[in-house]
Amino acid sequence: MKFVKCLLFLFITSAVFSQKNSELSNKKYVLLQDKVRLYANSNADSALVFVNKIEKSSNYLHKGFASGAKAYLFQIKGDSVKSNQYYQQAFVFLGKLKQSKEKRILNSDLLNYGGLIDWRKNNLKAAFDKFEKGLNIAKKENDLIRMVKFYMNISLINIEVGNYKSAILSLKESNKITDKIKYSFSEEKFTNYKSNINFNLGRAFEKAYGKNYSNPKLLDSAKQYYTKAILYSNNYLNTKLNSKMSLGNIYFMKHDLANAEKIYYDVLLFSEENKLLPELFSASYNLGSLFFETKEYDKSLYFFKKVDSIYNLTKVDDLYYINSNYYLAKIYTIKNEPQEALKYSEKYFDKFETIQSKIDNEALEVNFRLGNVNVKKEMEELQFKNRNKIRFWNLMIFILVGLVIVLVVLYVKSIKKKRETDRKVNALIEEYKQRLELNNTIPEVINETEVVIDSVPKMVAKMNLDLEKEEEIFEKLKQLEKKFYYLSSDFTQQSVAKKIKTNTSYLSYVVNKRFGKTFSEYSNELKINYVINELITNPKYRKYSTQALAESVGFKNAISFTKSFSKRTGITPTQFSKKLEGEKVS
Image (cartoon, rainbow, N blue to C red; front, side, top):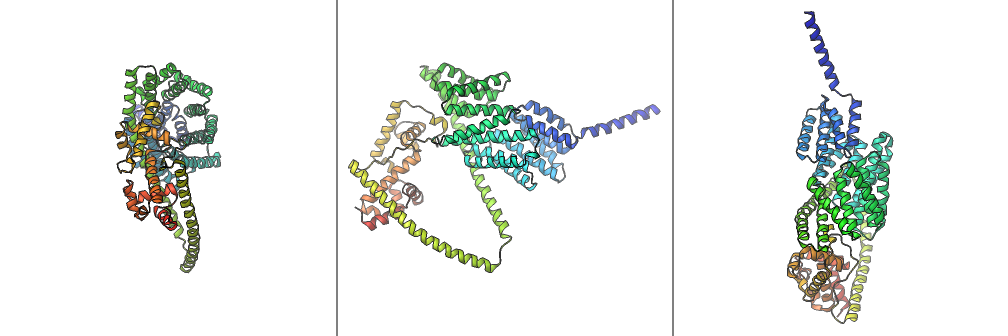
């Protein structure tokens, strides 16, 4: 009997001990969280080891965090099915917790992981929504560290959709907050945040240069931030390799190909040794591009085929993949192997249409969401201010004084505006007369400007058409101009491409190269210049209503016509007509 009692006692004490052991102490939980975050982007398998230790805890708070972290890590490893399962499970654990600050903070962490998962899937709008919700929770809890994290992640979305200025401002603010609360971090956390902030600042400036090739200072800024990111990322392999790769890209864009090649090979060899496929993919693509630039086509072919084979295994980067197919088609064309060239050009067009459509839709959704967020913030600020309104009579006095000031300002502005309008009209008339004297004909309505290919997708902008084909498209366009085909409302990129027997990509490329404009800008300028000439030379034309003027050159409504006219001249069609009538120009 005593033996049975002893066994029973041992069973009960061991069960109690195991229960206590299954509950992590807060200190150990925080330490394991830091380890997970430290290794998440550089070594997912190592991060999973620490997540599994957290998951063994019987605390639902710990289990919820572990499931959210696992969801993100499995997405990094490319397993979307497991990622979805663990993410749903995380919210089940969250629902089991009582309302508390800890629960709200866990909710913000799960929203952060969910946003990162969506971002990796290129679901930008969904990612932005999660980051915004998580940021609001962090603000309410006055959690500055998490606020920095969410600001950084929101800036990633801004970079993806081309809002580089917003991204840079957000990242610089994150940098200030991080330095301000430096001693709230461990050294590991601080260097992790600094490496990520500097890397993303480098990306934002590099991408901004892609929209404004005439400003080399943007590249210098990008180089500065990538160099800082490398210094801070000694313990963060993923960030260090990506920063090095990006620094190589800066050297490439500055035409320092020798330094670019050294950096690309450094990343390539390290990635091969450590079997880091995403980095190996990027390094191979960059070396392929570099050797194409130096016309070492066999080397270029080797690396682009490597890109193709890695993509078939991992689907790691769609844009690099379609660009590699573009280069492969070009190389095989140069090597006079038309069958191979055709194969890769077909792969390029098949993938390009799918990817570009998705990117455009995601950018549209995110920009719409950003607009709504700004309106909401503005309304919240107004509501806060209105809670402390001054008394009625003081407000009335303020309004009356304000009205007087506004009236005076409007009056002064109207005088300035009239003078400015007169100046602009005279300048347009003088421009017309000078061109008429030079040509003794109706002046050309196209002004070739510095070529800035911005709105055309990167992969199309890189096309290098056969000069004969390019000249043929250009001459056909000029023939359409002479026949005033642009006055038709049917003067669209698709209809013109069909009429001159080419495709919209080639047409867009030629218009950008020859006129420095998108097709829409080119079309509008032709129409507006025609109206300007007619208003100056034809008194009857000045009697037309704005709607009639718009319809005469193929605009569907007066609003869009007026907007285009004002953009070209700085004044409205009505102002121009009235001024011409007043001066009786013939």
